[in-house]
Image (tube, rainbow, N blue to C red):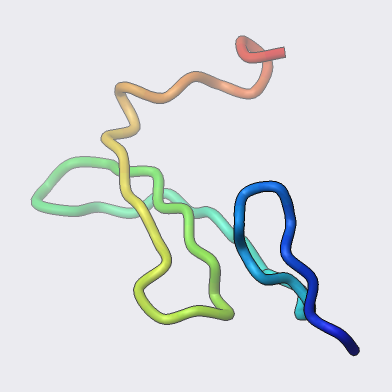
Length: 57
């Protein structure tokens, strides 16, 4: 497979697997989003600051 560069400057060629979960960090609930195909590619946000999917639609 040949690598290509998309509009954001990232190389593509392998699929990314992005997953999410709600977990407890320092006693508070957080939404975690991670690309499990890469090291250190994740973010966490206090779940009180997130919106539900139904509200977002």
